[in-house]
Length: 262
Image (cartoon, rainbow, N blue to C red; front, side):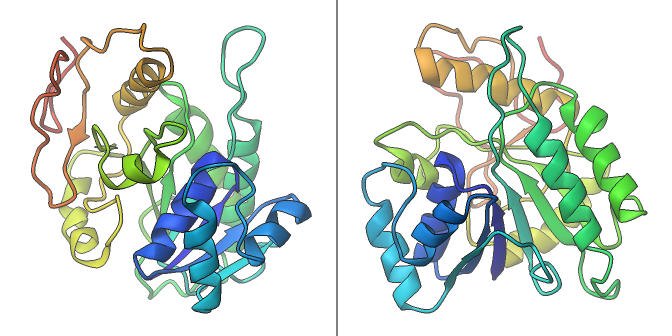
């Protein structure tokens, strides 16, 4: 598949390397010319064991490209992956300025895309607070694209659970995979994705509000080890082959797309 990755920080660089390892063609887009140049030369812009080797192999195979300009790269893409930063604010919230800006730029670039093609899957891997997809991302996409999801694009939330020094291992063997649903019944379209995708998004469920809560809580647990994850993870949690994950040891999880927080 041809996958466009937005943002070359920790999440974007790791995703790029692993997607290349799986045989995909990856086009990276970042506002930093330095980061784009490093990626094009097969060097990771972040320090993480194993990334340089995977990036260099992808470059040598002719499947890695990087630029600062989105151009027409979405015309033939199968997936766009948003991995831009969401830094903490002094108020303890998250700054979603980059997410909003990339969403608008991405959606505007979709206008020339052939409407007869399958919708581009836009997967958000950036950390966001609950409701951000509905309150910020979807409005930005719809306004810039001039249309709602379903024809030229579809939207999913697939938050990352990567730890420093073990990012590649966590990518291939995550403790959980959370994929949100945009509307009831949208999961029926996921069967299309399960046959096409050969990376972490094996099942594609457009986003639900509560799944951002799952990512936020689990991310805090990963980062500090001090935040309990005994709150239920509402929404879909699936292994790469579509099976529900077993309940994590010492944690409580609710499985099934209609599960509610306990």
